Image (cartoon, rainbow, N blue to C red; front, top):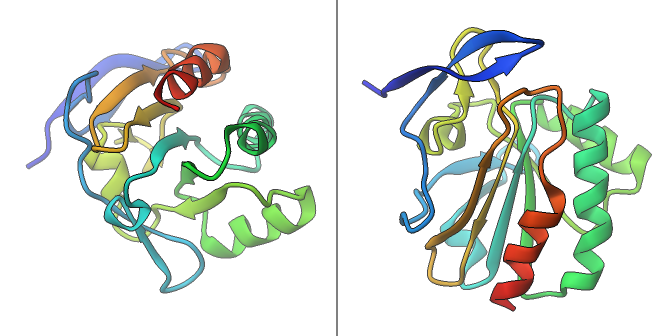
Length: 172
């Protein structure tokens, strides 16, 4: 049974419980399976030896999550092909596809963890009370070692984009 961590994250000031072990810098990145569209799995192994950025959001249909996704889509052009950026939520793949088309998200992958919350549990960011993912950023190097972690304490706030991007640029 996965571990539970209460109080490390809040939603509008109310404490929530995260399911899964907290990931720390230096850990090996856990394997996961998300979906890009129906039946099109995206796993850690699929990303190969690229530098990986996992931008985790509650729902792409909320203002901060929308801004977070757009920020990484914009930054992706400057980071180049050696960096794979995934926005991960439990939004249905249909919603993700609609969102990407409507918002011009074309440089990153927007994937869904709705089916079995594999990513959420493996990275300790699944919200028990809502079956949504919390807000966070994970940067993983070419050898799948975690180099940067941010679990955003208050979910309605933005992550530290600059620190995450600095970590990515330090790996290029």
